[in-house]
Length: 331
Image (cartoon, rainbow, N blue to C red; front, side, top):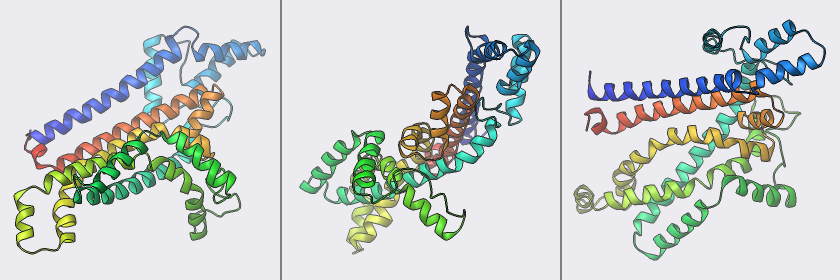
């Protein structure tokens, strides 16, 4: 097997093992741990006067676990249903968890993707600009400012933007993913969606920009000293051509693969921003489930977030191998 394929195979196996461990721990918390949610749910139904047979059958529908089976048999049944896309039913919303998540996840993907793209483009441009004045006053100002902005968490920035630009100035809506009167999937709806997501995207992307700036600046400053860059200058090429076609193109390779890694990480942190702005999304759904002790819904959200994160990391590994020949050659 070629070095890159073997390396990629190991990464895929690691991702599968990660998902397996998370699912197994979820099963332990649901079925084996003392005072687990399944037993509490059954007890609550018994307290309301339902028969034990009904309570057990209801728990199996909601949690995918049959308490009348042995632990190993229940585990096999639990895994089988998960593999078929059955994540149980929400206790309070009385809907299949998979259906609820399928409706919410496009909003989270949109928020995370738009924030990543915006932060990356801005970070690359400012990073290249900073590297052009490496060691100078402009470079120092950008570096210090980046360090300061990087220290601000996204949820704090979200609260500040919400209070100032939405509540005080009334420039943007206070909450919601879109206006209730909008008809989905036309140009007006898209404009309305972007209007509602402006502050959430800024809240998510601004704290990420300094990381991209410093990464690009460091790579560009190093590449600018290479012989082929000096040769390009001797050939009389324009500064903009050298900056973007020579230095910029190579500078983005190390950071580009971080995009997919960041995608997985941001899915988990979307909870705060989505909750603050009252957005649809897996993050806000997860927060609602935790607050209401809707364990099947919370666990379903967690499993989806972990699975998407692992898939994102695998895609990042593939991109890394495609962009960096040293990985394909097993360097």
